[in-house]
Amino acid sequence: MKKAVNLIILLVVSLLPVLSIAVGNRPNILFILVDDQSPFDFKFYNPESILQSPNIDRLAADGMVFDSAYHMGSFSGAVCSPSRHMMTCGRTLWHLPIGVGTKRICPPHLEQNTLAAIFNRAGYDTMRTCKKGNSYEGANRQFTVRHDASKRGPTDESGSPWHGDQVMNYLNDRETTKDADPFLIYFGFSHPHDTRDGRPELLAKYGAVNHTDKVNLPPSNDKQPKLPANYLPAQPFFHGHPGLRDEVSVSGVWKKRDERTIRNENGRSFACAENIDIQIGRVLTKLESMGELDNTYIIYTSDHGIAIGRHGFQGKQNLYEHTWRVPFIVKGPGIKAGTRAKGNIYLLDLMATLCDITGVSVPESCEGISFKPVIEGKKSTVRDVLYGVYCGGTKPGMRCVKKGDWKLIKYDVMNGAVRKTQLFNLAENPNEFIQQHHDPAVIALTGITPAKNQLNLAADPLYAAKLQDMEDLLLSEMRRLNDPYRLWNQPDDGLIPPKPVSKRKRSKKKKR
Ligand SMILES: [Ca+2]
Ligand SMILES: [Ca+2]
Picture 1 (cartoon, rainbow, N blue to C red):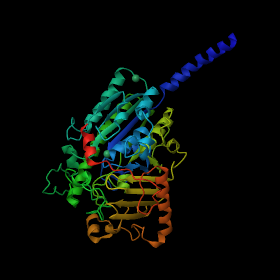
Picture 2 (picture 1 turned 90 degrees about the vertical axis):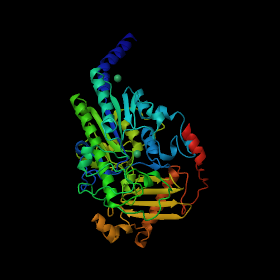
Picture 3 (picture 1 turned 180 degrees about the horizontal axis):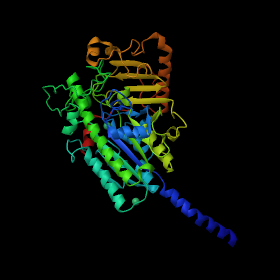
Picture 4 (picture 1 turned 60 degrees about the horizontal axis):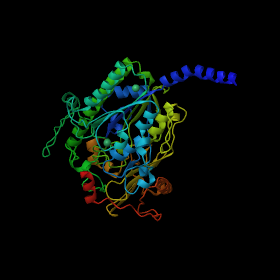
């Protein structure tokens, strides 16, 4: 007996150093999240882009770029909010602690199983800087160190450098105190979300001005980014959200979609994006000097994309690729440099993946799928089907589904006044060109002549069977994910659509 106890003690003692090394070697996480950015702003997604983002480009070159990363959608005009909820709790859109009539599908005390809470329990140091609001406050509160403020100004104190400073200060403290615990840093920015007030020297680089004149157009300038390939001067049909802020009142754009306004606004967005890139550069240099860069997984993404003139939209309330998709890079130990993957991931897969790569246990409430096999190069994708929602305006709203090269988008808004179906082959028509892009007046502006077959194929009898497949797929995703609505051409499944929150109730809620 004594011998056995001695043996156990010996085993435990001999294992201790191994365990502590293993703990000491746990990788750090630097999660970089920007606000409102289309993947097509970057050269690694769109070689035509003139955005200069050397630090983010280097992350892409040293890590893995995802070509199919999406947010699942939104039931609110503030698309940020559900997207950030999904990211920090790993749950699907209709299973969040917010949303109409969905609370019953969400377990109580979910904030205890959000990203920072589970990493705190696993012995990580957690720190966060980000904009304020439009996110999951219960999850934000879990970060041990937190410096949140909305910073969209043109100066160091009022803009992105402020967020950079918070992370720099945190890393300096870590260095001074010789803290060796692994860290999870949530490095969020308030830009390039509007108001896109850029620094003068960066604005000058992109030929843009911080335009505030509602009457006169901003000056044209050859240095500005060209019009986006799928630019349209107007939306071909109403998107179904009357008075939507992003489509009517963004400072510098308002309801305008003319060339000068759109090019200037994209120039402003690029100036803000480059300023973010500079801040990332500071932090990467610091991590390198601390000897921590090689043991850190770095994720770069946005809460969703943005249109700024594409398809005649300005905002983030649509399901075209420029807006539904997000830029997504992962760089870190064991990831082959310069690799690319489809991935087919949602932002809500982040939690499962971060747990998987760090050995932190995944809470039961998490519904995401780890894409660790993708970043290890063992698989090219973890999902076959992706589903998207926008229904912040009139209901049931927009839905989309994507499988392989095929994508279906449906619009059912304004009490049945707008009912549209779009079918795209993204391999043949990656810009999702529609009939209006073939208009000579539009071609004269963009300089891009779409090929004959680059169209919405929904009405083409050649693709009737494909259309039916995609319609069936959308319905099955809506059922699987507890979408509380159905579209005009779907069975109602006995669902009683959730009652809209009345304006009075909403404003009462806001006041609280
Ligand atoms: Ca956002
Ligand atoms: Ca510590």
